[in-house]
Image (cartoon, rainbow, N blue to C red):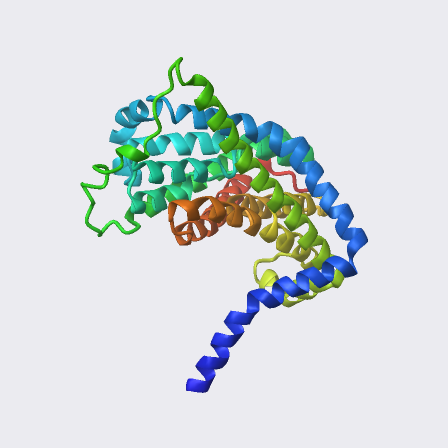
Length: 350
């Protein structure tokens, strides 16, 4: 038994270094395709992510130097506290997370925790449901761009929001038995940013831009990295092998094996996954839509690691986020299924 524990410990210790060594080796073996994938990821970041996210990041950083968040907190505390068991200020990351998409909600929640606006437990509850995919991506890219149908995009966005609200309500009981730390905010005044004025406007603007740029570059690195990882998995045959392995599980849910690669890709990186699923020719297109609803709710490992890189600085556990996103993906798929089978005009099946 003791020897077994030693073997397990050594495997855990060597797992990540082994993966990194294999990744480096595959970078050399599939250098041509990896280069093309890296360029595609970089193009996606430069043409889509930077224009859509950078202005929002700068705006939210600037809002942190105003009293907008505290005013919002006072107005909405009567709703946020009984429903989600979080302070009224939690409405801010929820709304901004919906408007601008991943990873805006997590960025604001991390700022709240660092500034003492919420406790650690409240930050974990907020993290579980305030980090979502935005309407530009769901309605524009997925609905209109991939499925060529505006109604499908609107449906996916509605079920996405309903799912995140459901998760938020469920997570109101997350660590609710713990004693509230009433003194949490007493020593947090030093963490709060100074309010913006004409005298410090230049300094505040520069600080907000630098913080926003750092976050956007971080996201770009993850997009390029996972574009290359997916390329390696495809070229090495690993993706097909894992797809064949999980095919019995997919059959239980009535999902054809042809969806396996797209689902696995989406679990790794959201954009590539929904593109792959939407492109699968099928008379029962509702399957494609429901699977995309799940992937949009879950977000993918790439986004999870982006969130981890943001929240780790504020020392917020990633565990509730992962559980929350799995639940959100499941609820989003369930709600989408209900809508498609209730309203005939939404169903595109032939």
